Image 1 (cartoon, chains in turn yellow, green):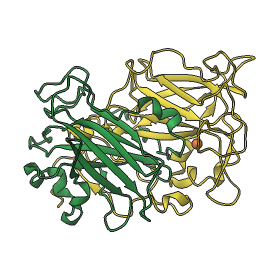
Image 2 (spheres, protein in one colour):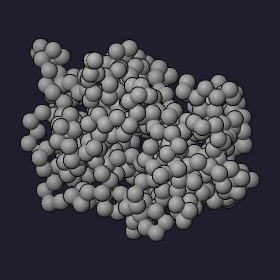
Image 3 (spheres, rainbow over the protein chains, first blue to last red):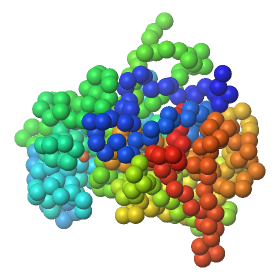
Image 4 (tube, chains in turn blue, purple):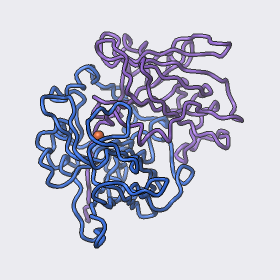
Length: 244
Length: 194
Ligand SMILES: [Fe+2]
C-alpha cells in the first residue's frame, strides 16, 4: 500500500503509450538529460490542481497573422491558415486560453542566435505567434508553411516540417508543449522526436489535416489541428476506471 | 447509457532549442510585484546534465502561492487573502552557465486535499531540448518545521529529499536560496508524476 496515494488524482492518468518516455537512444540529446530514476508518484494538491491562467491580459483577442511584419512587409512562402479546437479528453472546450506558437520560416531557418542552418532569414517573418481560444475552444492563425531543417542528431538528420505549440490549460496537471506536423511529410517515418511515442494513433494525432473549408481561394491553404489536454474523471464513480 | 467520446491527451514533444521565439513574451523573473505581502527572497538556480555540464537551453517555469498560502486560481477556495495583481507565475530561461535567477515572496503554507498543512514550496517545471516531456519538481525551504510532515516530501525516499531543498545564502542583505538541479547522477533531482 502506498500511503502517498491518500486521494486519487482527479485527473485521468495518461493512456498507456500515448506519451513519450523521457529516455530514447535514438534521440541523442535525451541521453544526458532524461531522468534515470523513476518519477515519484504523489497525490496532486492545490499546487498541481491549479496553474497560471493566461487570457486577455496577455493578448488582445482577434486574429493572429504571422505573415505580416510590423513594417507591413509580407513573409516569403506558402501562406497557410492553421485552426482547430482546444478540448479536454472528454471533448469539452477550453475557452479563452493562450496558445504560444513558434516555427522556422519557409526556408527552414529560425530567427534565433543558435540556429546555424545555412538558409536565408526572412526580414518579414519572426516565427512568433500568440493566440487565444474563443468561447468554443477554437483558435486560428495565419502563417507560412515552415521548411524542414537539418539537425545534428545523426548523419543527414532532417526534422519534418513542424510548428511548436505551448498550452497551459487550467492546471499544472494539464500543461502541454507539442509539435504539429503536416500530412504526407516524407521525413516523418525517420524523425526520432516524432517516433518516440509508442502509440501510433497518438503519433498520428500530431499530424494536422488539410482542410478545404479553411482554405481561402487564391490565397491560403487550410490545415486543422485539434489539441486535447488531460481531463478530469467525469464523476467520482469513474475513478480508477480503465478507459483504454 | 451513452458513452462519451474520449480522446487521449495530445502527445508531448520537446520544446527544442529555439523556444524563446514563442515563449519569451511571458518570461517573468520577478514573480511578485509591488504591493504583494510577504518576505522578499531570491532564488539562484543551476541546471546540470548527466556529465555535470551546465544546460544553457532550458526554460524553467515557477508556480507558487502567495505569502498567505493562496493560489491565484479559482480552483483555490481556501479562505485566505489574495492581492490584486499577484499571479505567482515565473518563467526564466537558463543562461550560458545553466543558471537561472528569480525574485519573489516566500510562499505560505497551502493545505492538502485532506486538510493538512504543506510545507512552503515552489512548483517548478522544466523543459529543454532533449526532454521529450516536461518535468515537474518542487523546491522546499531549509529549516522549515513543516518539512518533517509535508505529505509530498514524505512520498520521496529519505535519501533523495535533499535534492528538493534550497540552501540558504545571503546576497546584498536579501535572503537568497541556492539550488542545483541534477538531471541525472547520484544527486538526481526528484521529479513527480501526479
Ligand atoms: Fe523546431
